[in-house]
Length: 468
Image (cartoon, rainbow, N blue to C red; front, side, top):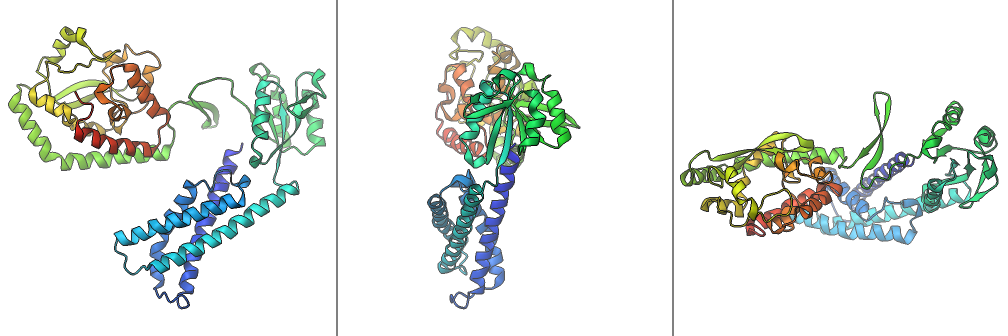
């Protein structure tokens, strides 16, 4: 109901703000003689993309576009001031690092000062305008709520607690005629279902919101048809299922409406960048590590009989099975000997971990300590079987022992590293704790988290921290 309006308004504000940045920069150019700062026009055009990124990023970071309509003027001015000061420092550092000697500090000061002044004026005018239209009773959407139960009351409280949404409830409707005239959460029950046409014709109604029990769905269809014929917008609350972490969204499959519940990240743009990063980094890693791969291959071949590369079937995204590649670090019959060592397993749960595993060779122990045995998995990343960051891929035999919640580890593409790697690695002895970290990653995923984990993994691997 509100998301589309909020997204449009936020994008419009960002666009206007970037236009102001461009206008302020161009004004500095027009006043270059007065400011004793002579630069060609192309210099200002070259600076604009960087200025756009700095101003747009900082204003967004400091919360300029969150709940803007209820912000106070001092709060807005503080955001602009912080963005201007930090932006000045960042842009100054940028010109120094890239040796843009033709860009003086005075020019940067003029641009950021003028931009801050223009943004402040624009935001103050905008806030005063919103206050004016609200005082006049404009810029509100009038809602008629069908339903009076606990869910409807929770919805009313939500609307009352967010005045910036610009929603105004005109009253309620219930299936029972006896509730007419009752006051619920400060709003009057205007009538029953049969009264809806009269209520709509005698009041200004922009939208009808149905917050009703599942048992009422058959009863409200006639009212929905009426609203459709009148051209009124209709929303139906579908919080019928108390799911713990899934997020609901409406989708459409060639005209067939679906209500989708997702428990995995759905940021398509960020997921696309994640995959592109996987491809680029894996290609670069395979190229630059080629000499190291050759050396390790020779060492493994010299110390062990049999193939250099160990291949094993693992479970990937949503149970997809693939062949995982590693440098061989154990004796040739290691998998058969695991049954003999089952009683020494140090990991609680369906995973086998053993410090000082007798199956490890000397070179294998070294490779594992610094995760060098996993370098061939960059090929798995390039192929798409794995990602740089994600839950480690389990064996099919392990997955068969998983509890339902543990199987949710498979709801994202497996990776070379994850939170488990940087928060204990092999020092974690309870599989439930391992799963908890994987689910924390899945439930809180965003692109920046991958880069944080990657950088911290480099430190963990180089120091051998937590390795066995």
